Structures are given as C-alpha cells and as structure tokens.
Amino acid sequence: MRYAIDEVTTLVGTLPAGSSVTVKIVELGSDSEVTLTDNTCTESTVISGMYIFDTSKMEAPTVYTNYVYEMTNGVEKFYGKFVMGGSIESDLKDVLSILSQIPADVWAHTVRDLTVQTGLTDEQATKLMNAASRSDVYAASLIA
Image (tube, rainbow, N blue to C red; front, side, top):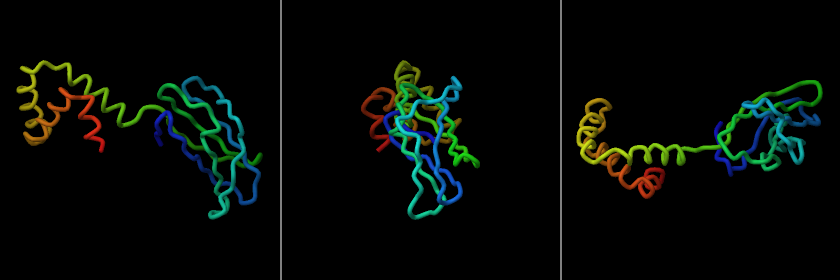
C-alpha cells in the first residue's frame, strides 16, 4: 500500500492470539533497519490474533521509500510491505508541470492525437489542455 510522506498509517499482521509481538521495519532501497521509538505491536480487541503497529513510531521519510516489515512473537513471523512518499496529488502535479511546457500551437495537434489515440472526447482533451496551462490550480479540481 502507498501512503503520503506525512500520513500516519497502521500496519497489521496475524500471529497466534495472546502473543507478545514486536515489529522490525527495513527500508528496501538501502536494506537498512528503520529506527523506531517503540517496536511493540498491540493485539486487536475485536479480531483475536490481529496485531497492529502505528507508523507514527518511525521517522517519516523525505522521499518515496519502499519498506518491508516483519512482525514476530519470537517463533512465528508475519511479513508485509508498504510504501511512503509520493501520492496521486504529487504525481499529478509533476505530470501537469510537464504538460504546461508544451507550446500552445502544439496543443491543437496534441488534442487531436489524444482524441484519436486514447478515445478521449474533445471536451476531455480540452480539459487536459486547460490543466496544463493552469496546472497549479487545476490539479486540485481534478483530485476533488
């Protein structure tokens, strides 16, 4: 699952009910263990054997980062993966920034190509053109 850099999320794993469970998180790019303020997982009071860890107990990354985590009771292990950094909003802003650099005289041709090659309607292609010329404002309306 992918989360924004400043988003706090909950990691879950399943191990035998009543276990004492800890978590270890590894940053995949550097294969280094992430420092945690507390590595203790909490068992759900609703779903027996489901263990929970809050990512606010780790330092947030500053760039797009892949992680793997291991929950263990000392005997059995549960593994999971998550990604932090980037989001549809930031990806969209990057794309719109690139699109905004296309000269206006090229857009007419580009809009025709978009409608032919992608099946977009003229209205949709025009919205894309407008988005590129107003990328900072239009991105928010596309997301909303």
